[in-house]
Amino acid sequence: MKQVAIVMGSVSDWPTMQASATILNELQIPFSKHVISAHRMPAQLQDFGQQAVTRGIDIIIAGAGGAAHLPGMLAANTVRPVIGVPIESHALHGLDSLLSIVQMPAGVPVATMAIGVAGAKNAALQAASMLALQDDQLQQRLLDYRAAQTQKAIESEAQLD
Ligand code: RP5
Image 1 (cartoon, helix red, strand yellow):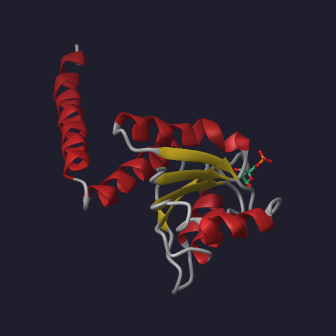
Image 2: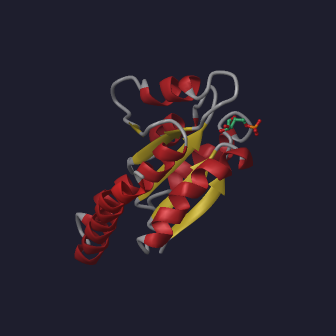
């Protein structure tokens, strides 16, 4: 079963969204990957959102750039949680993407992460936290991930020559 779906508006978003995939792999969370453009594939977007529950998708991570309608429109078509990742666009460095995704009017939420790779990483970690609510083994892997991160930060001080 694919617990998480990583959806992006364009294949050009993959270098960013790959960071989500890397962390999901590390935490042994099954996921699928999809390119669904909100403005180029509106019918496919609607189908994907409406079929998320029956396809066994628990959480959708949606990355998009520019006038980024993908996360909000997916959220409008499903009650599964949608985590939005604003892609760092060329023209406005992702501020356009961020505001498009984060400013959802009341009624349909999108949990919006930071712009770019940091957001893609955190989207996977956020999904892991949510899935860990009902998965003790995943919770332990998440705790181990945090512990390793802490240890790495502590050891980084040695680089200050
Ligand atoms: C959005 O437009 C995508 O999410 C991407 O970030 C941006 C540019 O897409 P391409 O023109 O590179 O396909 O839909």
